[in-house]
Amino acid sequence: MPKNDRPLGRGLEAMLGNFEIPSKGDTNHIVSGNSTIRIESIETNPYQPRTKFDETALQELAESIKTYGLIQPVTVRPAENGKYQLISGERRFRAAQIAGLTEIPAFVRTVDDLVSIQMALVENIQRADLNAIEIALSYRMLIDECNLKQDELGLKIGKTNTTISNYLRLLKLSTPAQVAVRDNLISMGHARTLVVVDDENIQTKLVRQIIDQQLSVRQTETLVKKTLESSGNKKTKVKITLSDEIRNAQTSISNKLSSKITIKKDISGKGSINIPFKSDEELKRILKLLQ
Image 1 (cartoon, one colour):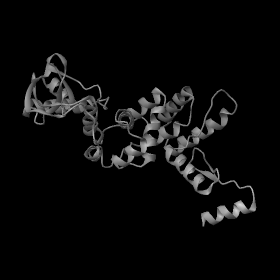
Image 2: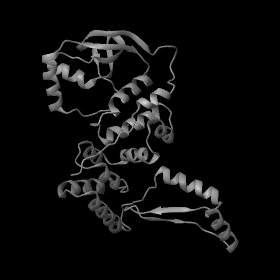
Image 3: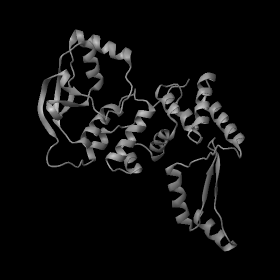
Image 4: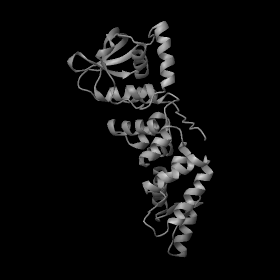
């Protein structure tokens, strides 16, 4: 089965360098440098975008920690009742627990929720082992929590609007399909093909078929196309959704030509651009603009 390449571009660090983070007063500062904190006093970060940790890798890291100690501190922020909440370093934290450590080194910072979200994302989104669903959730969280528009996020992290859209569309998949992407049972290419199927039951059946028959993305496109065609007037409703980038282009061109153009595409990516006109004069006007 093809692996998900997951190119991450410049990451979120570039975004944070230019993005003003709203906070109450000057609360986002280091309280202490490298402190030692009891591991039982540390809580995990609810904003952690990574949802799955490789158990074998954790065991290997735990063995290294037993031998050499935890070299790189985790980053935490004060929480209630004398506790601390992880901002970044959950993998190291988990491995330290497995290794039986009672205390670990930590950088302590006081930051608001928004900064905590961003710091957790900065550490994780740049890692090559984040799966496509986790990246999509990270993008969605940044858009929602940081009040960013999709195109603004794309500009700040060096991604095209299409790339952002492709990841966010994965969140429209059924739960079994998302799990299959998360566990690398199907690739992002497979998932993007499945998004056009609205019926979750059919989506789930297609996922099983892709996995069982080890279908390529191209074979999956053919399978989905046949499924859509055979659904006909049955209960299943299916549609091809244009990306935000294409819809924006459609609006922009319509405005420039003063004519309501339409862009259509099928599951394979093929399609057409229709430019209507009502008279020879209007046709000449449009042709002159196109030239």
